[in-house]
Amino acid sequence: MKKFDKERVLLAVAAPLLALVAAFLLTALVLAATGKAPFNAFGIMFDYGIKADSQVYILNKATTYYLAGLAVAIGFRMNLFNIGVDGQYRLAAFFAAVVGGALKLPGLVQIPLIILVAMLVGAMWASIAGLLKVYRGVSEVISTIMLNSLAGILISYLLVDGRLAELDKQTNIVSTEPLPSSSHFFTIPAGGGLDPVFGFIVVAALAGVGFWFLLGRTRFGFDLRAVGRSESAAQASGVDVKRMVLTSMLLSGAMAGLIGMPTLLNDTHQFTADFPAGIGFTGIAIALLGRNNPVGIALAAVLWGFLERGANRLEFEGYDKEIVGVMQGVIVLCVVIAYELVRRYGLKRQQQRVGAELAAQARKGEKKSDTKEVAV
Image (cartoon, rainbow, N blue to C red; front, side, top):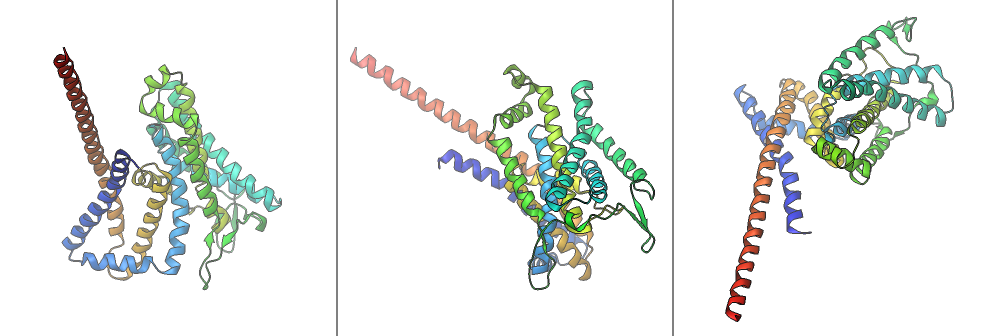
């Protein structure tokens, strides 16, 4: 590996590590200011997080968070801020649950159909923001935030007994019709009486590979990143910017449609009012921490699952569980600052290398001219 490549890798790793170290130090100061022992809290989180049941919990959480991070990262690569991932995945999971509950097909047909419905609904809902941006110049940040609220209102309207949901008189819970057993996704046994690992982790891994290949090894991915860097330059080179913006929103929405599938197909098997919410916003933090890289996003998703698991234990040990929320917020803030510092340092180092190479070339030119004069 060349020296330049080594330095680039080090800079890529330095930013998240710097952010994590700074976040833990700041959190330690907050704990100390409240009269709590910070290192004891970190020890409790670590000891509890490495237990077998905690590892299963973290993997299942990370599966969902990883898909959320990928959905957000597709937009980030295009310099688009798809803040509407939260509404997209909830609406997608709702309609996927409705379709899955209404059909009684073999699992080999029904499960792919449910997943396809979720991806189509997510893509269609995201396309609204894409169309508004392309043809009306509406910022995707504003439109996707508004679409989040509209998605919640639509779900509340349809999730009513007699519409697209039914009331369980025993539990008094309104939900979509439960999925038939043929729609239950496979699980990976953890042994020892532990809960199984969601089988959807395999789909999440395949989605990460697809993300890496599509955006990093294809002409489409190159065009997408080019538009994200400079729309005018990409358009001058023949790239249809409007088409790329709309396609990126569609892909981001389709990926968002997968976020609710681990919960729907591996856990609840129906959609209720308390279906997990807020995962789309978590995906923003995970994509930032993972630097929009599929491997980095995976590590960030595992970290987020670990922190949430640790929060549950801290509450039993007399600590405020909100301290983990503080830690997560500080991590996001430190990530933004650390990336900017590392970016500036990398730019400075690049300028120094270019200056050194130009100076070396100038000295060579002077020596050649001196040699010619002596020869004359």
